[in-house]
Image 1 (tube, rainbow, N blue to C red):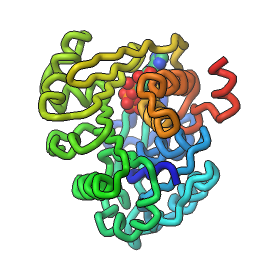
Image 2 (cartoon, rainbow, N blue to C red):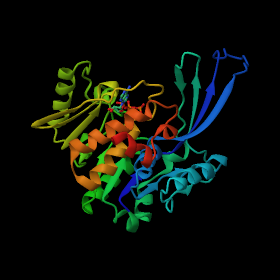
Image 3 (cartoon, rainbow, N blue to C red):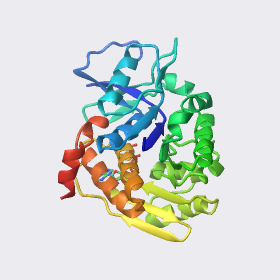
Length: 303
Ligand code: ATP
């Protein structure tokens, strides 16, 4: 195994609506789509689709979505030996309402993801020990994230921590034990309580975190690209100019692709350039995982 993603999976339940029903009202909507998502699963898929050997440690519910989620992961060649179903609990689901102007309203029900516990890391320890890199996000209990970081540290495994969704209760000392801390602008703003409108402001907010001992801070900036900051270095990666259709899952695409390239080259700036190209492609199509390029498409993009 190259990479273990210890994180969430969600089923996106997307209703395309003309109007939002008022309280007590029932309305017809023109279309509906179901998709596999969740930050952890998206990142696992992005890395696996490029050829990384990925295992996923996650929990599914006791419902019809569980089988679909596992089948989807397997389809990308992701190892699901340690994906367990939680009895009497729903899978993680995200009912999404998209109106005619493409604005969306999203509900997240974490469901089984809340049941991924430190004991699950112990359960998968032998396989996890063989990985080069862990990817973690915050859609699972924080105690599990902290336990995974400690586990990685004690076995010489590198760690990417994506602090999403932003949590003010995240203990930044754990982030300092990760090799990469990868928030987007909004998460950086919430974590520091500082504005992030300009590059100067981003750098000032980043300095607050770096002064606490973070090793590598990579901030994704949407259509403005991405920046890698350390105590003494700042490397800006230009975005690839594309016509954006749907940016959901772009951050996950970036992280999964970065991880795939980083474990091979250990070249951070080059891995960010590849991630930026992969993520730019993903915003040109609808959905999250369904908008990611496959290996052949990505090879063509690179030319
Ligand atoms: P999401 O929460 O939607 O998954 P995010 O907010 O975590 O995304 P972003 O910072 O929006 O992540 O995007 C991640 C990366 O994707 C950016 O650093 C950039 O490389 C690429 N990207 C995003 N939007 C665009 C765009 N409109 N044009 C080109 N590249 C983009």
